[in-house]
Length: 172
Image 1 (cartoon, rainbow, N blue to C red):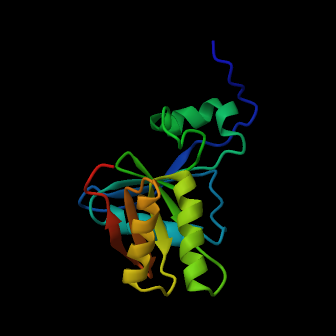
Image 2: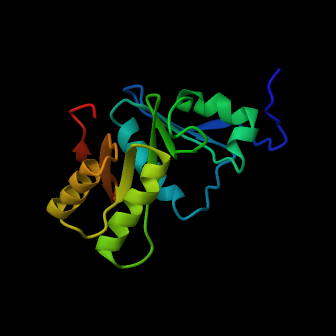
């Protein structure tokens, strides 16, 4: 018998929002707030990957993840990782990604804050384009890696497009 209580029940029903002929689809949990400021940006990212034939799920947030059996149903693959207990925004072909945006007009601080917040949720993050050059962003990523931060992928979202900024090829 589990020590986990289920007193934080959320609606785990899902809706297919987009489906493509190549098999790609975007699935959204009905418990997700579709009026949040990030929702449209996250959907745009999800559609980008689904158009490539990938299965994308927008995942729900839990207030007390480790006290909720439902958390384990969705995020069980995070067990044994430093991200266990976190709720990344997207699951793309079974791999979790975090989306981060910004609200102030300070490109350097925005980029740094998006990386900082995002890397708490996943080592694969999607950030909003913030006005920094690719060179400066890549230098910041290299500096974090040198400092011992494990980063798998960084994508930059602008409009309806995503660009892969960094992909770890060395398996840190």
